[in-house]
Length: 227
Image (spheres, rainbow, N blue to C red):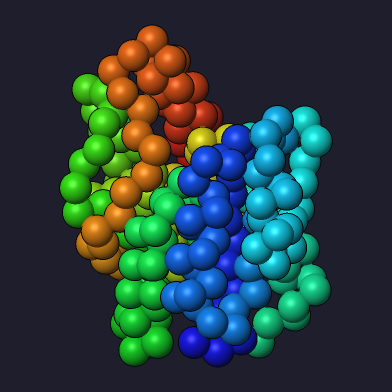
């Protein structure tokens, strides 16, 4: 893997899984620059990222995933000044060792078959009744005509120019829906790739339902903003 690949990872209080995620990324993308957007973590997330050699963009008080990732992406684009053939990986900090699967997202881009790829998890882990995901899928179809399997997957690869064109990301959990809609409307080709990934899944607990309620609220805001 060469230095034309750069990785932007978002994390909030992921100290228990982040180290394994970063090790897998470093091994799978040798020579790539690694950026961690720490969205107001209260644990050792930033220290673990720095120890792994990543550049940390830390927000002291949480702004939400989309805003934190926007700051990190803009800084990476400014400092790296990547050429048009550079490729960006976006991912979450809780993938642990399965982050080693992410190089497979690059193949369709390198073959000229897509401009953005999105990982579809081969196995479903946790989750609720599916209302938030169903709305996200419907919203994307209504706004740009695509019908994705994984509308809110945070594991993506895209060309540097495409990354520039979809910034700023939508706030909060609406980041991925907004990115897909904006990329498709700009004429970029979006393709999904099934990968054997695992992440921290929210269960059918009170905390899990509150989390998905916040997601759904952000999804509705993105849908309304992209009329």
